[in-house]
Image (cartoon, rainbow, N blue to C red; front, side, top):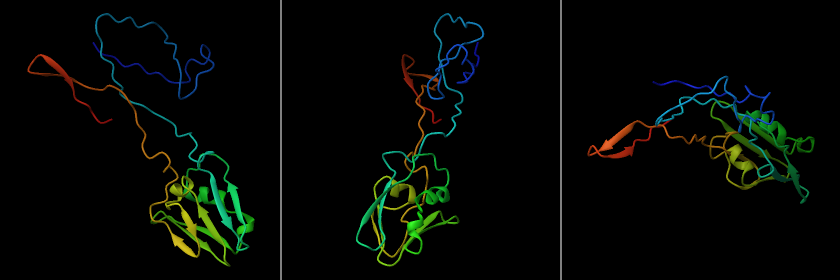
Length: 180
């Protein structure tokens, strides 16, 4: 016998009001009583992308408007889904005519242009989202890599034991891992 159990994170809020999408308990409509040994596998996972890709660890950049004064700016932490949305958070009225950011949708690259002795200091973390290495931008520069707002989270892992039972020499069991 085999069966599926669906465990949505918001189905038991009446019983477990502190449930979160990332950590929850589900109250089943009726108990499931299992006898003997069972193997459990993950058949499907659905996750909404709601975590911040810009946080207090990667939200700082610095610039000089040509006056020899380095100004530090913090971008508001949040979930920036697109590069243009992220660049919009970088731009300040002070930058007018001195610093500009442009995103090219066709090749996913960013161009930073500084004028009148101004410069942009790209710090580790934030520069990864723009496709740059940490350094100081003076003049015109384009990204070395593709700009990716999710660069801080390059891989999403699900750890689970999904495997068929296999035997070596008919006696010793081994596991065959399956990509999910």
